[in-house]
Image (cartoon, rainbow, N blue to C red):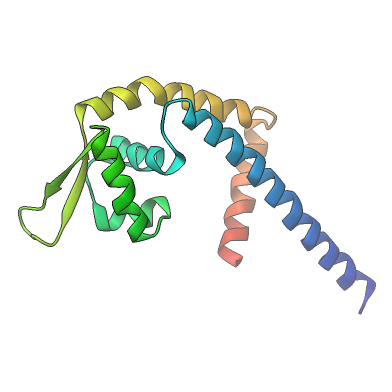
Length: 146
């Protein structure tokens, strides 16, 4: 094995470890912020999707918030019990059910989303605008290659 190949392998491994640790640290901080509102990260992700994008077919929510379809039903049930969302039948296709945010859910998100956004800004405050843009580009490139 050439010295360059060995260095590249070591750098790839180190990159993976640094990325994994950074992801864990950021995720922990974001989760900590979300839990202050009495929600878990999955519940928050579903609420945030409905708040910003409107009614969604329950079958499609999992793809948009990266959840297994069985887990979505459980999360929708929990949010429904909290009166934050409701289920609506699709008038054109009885096989499709939509999740819709309630007024109570909208009120909660209007109240908590700005401070959640501030918490995320604080997490990324060590990076300037150019560094954030570079980070986004590099992570996209990495994700596409993976």
